[in-house]
Length: 319
Image 1 (cartoon, rainbow, N blue to C red):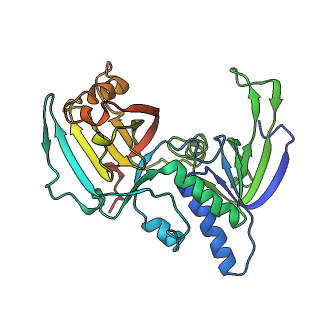
Image 2: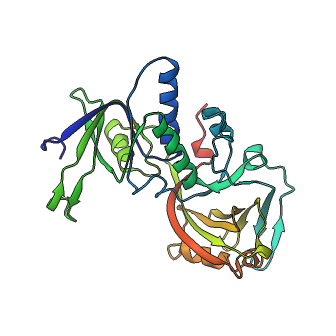
């Protein structure tokens, strides 16, 4: 469509698609490097959500080392890392009981000592404020729908702000063609299974000779619980029930802030049982004796689900 329509175009040095942690951190770092070199660069960040953080679902455990490297005075700047991790628990669940395996020699990257529990959406909003303070232009509500290419085949930029496309893929009566954003460099940070990333993979055959990517679905709820059930700084992960031995996945539960509990369930999408419902398994999980007491008397505030990328042996670089 971009080849036949006349659109307005805006020129930038760098266009970043996605105002998540990666996109915003990249924008900040680019501006910092330019300032240190005494140069001026223009950076635009496109975000499909109505505001920065609108599509950030994670109630996350965050290692502050990356933020500290990006913004060394992050504590003085008031980063919303609300609650330091005080306890790590790992449970193996059975139908009616659990085995605490927190004593096991887990690798360091699985341990959360020194990390913080926070809303990743709030962290992104905080990063956006600092990015804009450095001169980054952030455009929420602007979904990037397609790529634009130079004559020799390199990426020229993206098309954003297209509205009014019908179910048949054709322009409707309220159609708006959007605008092209051209850049010397285009950074795609749109998240899991992004539409632009898939276009690039197909056009440049980026998956050739690579192991297939592994995906899961993550379902999360945010609860506000009574004081008796709240353990600030607790991070708990489980595996086992209600999933069988042929289905990969597990759960997380993080206590943070003002009596908030972020609880979620992950199911690997290579499960074999065609009748399995990840949502129903999550609801069963919450009835387990090791989980239910944390939620009783509480109120569910929000919920959501999204695809997630997963690692494993197939994701390790080839030696």
